Length: 255
Image (cartoon, rainbow, N blue to C red; front, side, top):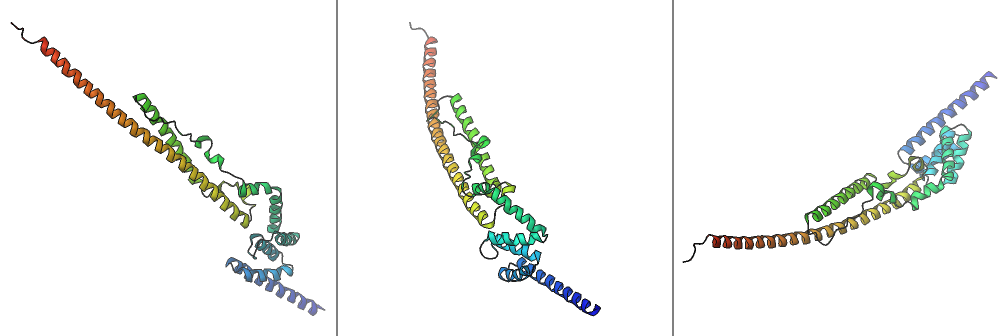
């Protein structure tokens, strides 16, 4: 009887060792991204009741490494693994639960976010009012100051936009962790389009401001040059008349 028990225990031990070796092989295949071979081995082990293999198989279906993303299969394997005490599977099931509860938050970053906050508050750069030309020093200084203020705001806006590129950085961490790969890819593409639109709109507005400023500067410089020439000519004429009058004042009396 003892001999039978010993043989049975030995058989079970060898089977457990084989299972451990196969799990290590499956993990190595997954690490090498040999997905077809990995899923084949994980499936064999999972069907045999290996909780870790069940969890890893659920992960592969979750991330689409088993082909296409299959949340139903992933959920089923997670539940089997969690029932056997696998902590990773239990955490995955909580993640699935949170995805259901926060579906609207996930979809917001895939199809609704418009980037309005990136052009608000400190980064709401109102274009300065630039006249056709300015004729006084006060007017010239006022325009120069307003353009400088706008330019500082615009540069800050650009720096902030660049700092948040790619715009997936804006997704709150507690939401980002709920995305599967397909959703993350969709969010990345959508947010790239939003970023390009914001950048294009800002560039067009900046070009309009700079064009108005260039036209104002040319017109103002032309006016100032002409005005200074008139003043110079007038001053020269007045000086000539003054000198003539002074000469007359000191001319020798006629006899």
